[in-house]
Image 1: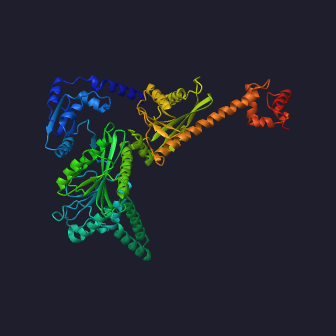
Image 2: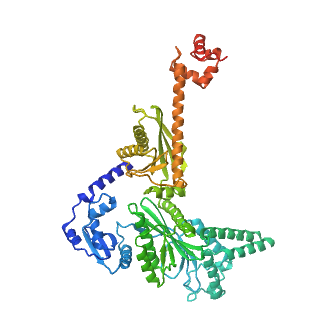
Image 3: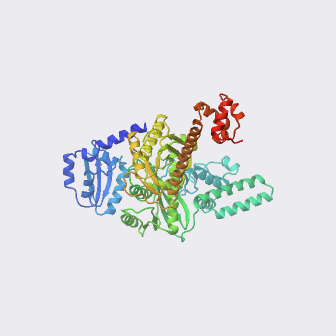
Length: 637
């Protein structure tokens, strides 16, 4: 199936290249008269559907660039150009206005060729209705601009349950839906009688007292658990001293819940400042953006944005989408108030324009920076790590049936994805190595790693069938072809990354073999031993990865494992050949008798140490033949 898809993709790429698509006359006229001013352009299909919305510093040059024959254009861009039937442009006064308009139009029209934001409706939030006189607390999956406070989204359901459990055990929040104080029952409900509510509905708890309780709950949900922890410890001690062991156990559970919230929320202080920290992670067509809200050095929450159909989008486009949708789109719609500093994981072309827009909206200076070192760089790494974990959770949510079987990918896999610029996280990898003895006993190994760990039950070795001696390139091509062909026949998962032990020659041989199998979409990289250089297809120069980085260390580990496995198999074949050669020189000892001797005595050394009587007792051997074997191998008695 994957082979068919790959072939189809190559065919589409060939037929949808701009060289093969004629631009309609009316579009050519539009291109000829485009203004040289900033603005937004809308690409439309045959039925008027808006296919893509983009912004430009200069509309004329940006829009015309789509219709130039360019081999570097992505398949997605080529397909977009093939479908365009009309182009509309909206001229604005500045780049800042173009940025805002682009965000609004994308939010309104959801063009299919823009990467698509998917709201986190599957992730739960804790909602506190602070806009009500007597607020309630519950779980919701919908965020509205209704004045309530939302905490989340919680991609880890355990953390959310721990937070709610603390609230329920420590506080008596009402669960009814009366619009207090306008609506009220005649008498308290069951919650009051079992101690879960103090019945503010009938005036048994004042609004001031209830509000004080809600303020403490907000404090806990924001991550400030120190005071509540001291209170729970004191109550647990008092209950234990009074021999109220059930109550003591409840407060013990409260402490455990507070610890969970603290682990989820608290980070080290960074000069007491306020920051938003943005991180991104991606895997195939799915991309996740995370915005960590840090105030006074404490992580108060995390906003998660999920984008689909992002496979062809460069990292800068994903980052731009995260920032503009959060601050100019979804976040702006619920009145989100950004701090004075926003930290990004990478440079962004429109950074200065964005600063101007947000600063103007807030009426104060908002600065965007990309930290290079120090505590702020550590916070940026933390945001990226959060995005990676959110991506793992999103992949699990997208395929619920695989949640139990899926292991969380190690951080090093994301580092490797970044260093090799892979479209997907290489959760499944295979590495090939060739071993021979001056052109004889040529063998290949294929070792498999899953989630950065060896999967030894899927290790394979093979004898190279070709008669080309020490031609490593041909041997590599045969090994890759045979291993992947069997993988396809057995409908086994295809690795996201194929690692080759060798240089450019072995790499090119592997790439050609995969192309012939219709697996041109499999990422390939080679690792040369001498300088530990990493080569990628189509690149003349190696990828520079520091020797101290975990990404290179993982490649070295899988390469060394493939080399070990290949050399071990090669030595085994040579040993067998040597043994059989020595025994085969003895007249009357053919292949069957050689096998019988090795089975009985275990090795050539065992045969050498055997006596004439012991050899004669082996089925098929006479005393005369035993004496001849002893003569040839030397008397060891």
